[in-house]
Length: 551
Image (cartoon, rainbow, N blue to C red; front, side):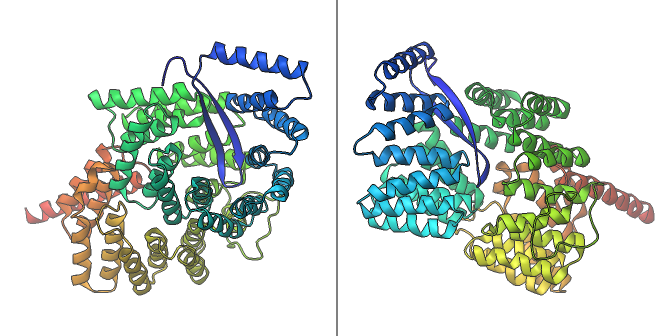
């Protein structure tokens, strides 16, 4: 990014996520931007009845991150334009929608709809209205209709992709983002979205290629640099010359968006993977002190504490994120991971329908599951998570398995949905059904073999076949899990964990211990780290006893 470029970061909450960070770039010197703002402001005060310069002012305020002022100026433009511009209506409505003011957004969208004559445009606006009303399926159908009417209009495909992302349908989102890229190969928003979707489905090689392409097109883009830094941290490129490059990338992210949690989270994990856990805590603790009402900051802090084994503190931080912004399913899913490992109250009775929120009651694991299912019924991962909690923590076997199956109904073509369902079945002791579900997911994997979750799925299949007494099939799957060594570079710590688990299932204790030690050396995160440390201690004890017995 040029030194003469000014950038403002805007954080807006919306119903589909923790926050929307709109990273807006202005290719002018800050002093020039301020002068332009002053000139336009003075002009509209001098000539209040005009709309053209006021529209310029609104666009500038939006780009500078002054959203509320921009909204007011867009309103003034609409009042003065004759005939009113559909484009300005849509810009205003979108901002209101992202700010969580759905009722006002609907009114503006409907006004635009009344003046729209193009059927594709009408369908697009109808889709936006449906989303404001919480009708995701109607929104998808409307955007699909708009895209079919105008297949060469990237705006329709992009809107469709973004709503699919919002409901956790990475497969459908990937198709829509690819449609945008077929029209505009260098579209950076679609490139980033496509990368995220590829990562979500675990197709790591194409994802890396897409990120490299995005880096060529926009080497100074915040979203691209953030994902590059995250990838390098996950690959544990945190020492020597590679470490310097990773830290330099994180520094660029922080420089571009100092008030966003993203860069601080990256820096914290950079420290953690270097063995400097306390430094990472200081980074995120400092961010939450400076931004006490920032839900993403508390979410990041909670995840970090969870990954370092500080479960009680993690729960407290995540509950702060929940209280600040109880509209994000990832907060709920994180709490479902964290709360069972803490001493916070967990009732003996599992959550029961009807799913009604009681605002004055104590937050418990049961209440979190209730609200999660009620708030996010279109998210496959929510059903899988809820099913696992019911089976593991409440021994609600039948209901837990039934709820988990809902994820595969929502996403029948997504391997992860089947893997998640199969894992819940295995935890419930239904290994025959688990094998069927896991095998179904395996059939949906990409043919190129670059699917990151292939290792864990193979291990689960091997373990379930082992419980069923089919030693031949069990060994075949566990040996298959040991063959994915090329995936070590993408996530070496977790790859070591799964390698160790597979080798242990094969009875190769020595190699299993070595794989586990490799994972620990690469800063494997909790809760897996705690499991591996206990396993290594136990296996070493068995080896010593075996040596003494032979002696």
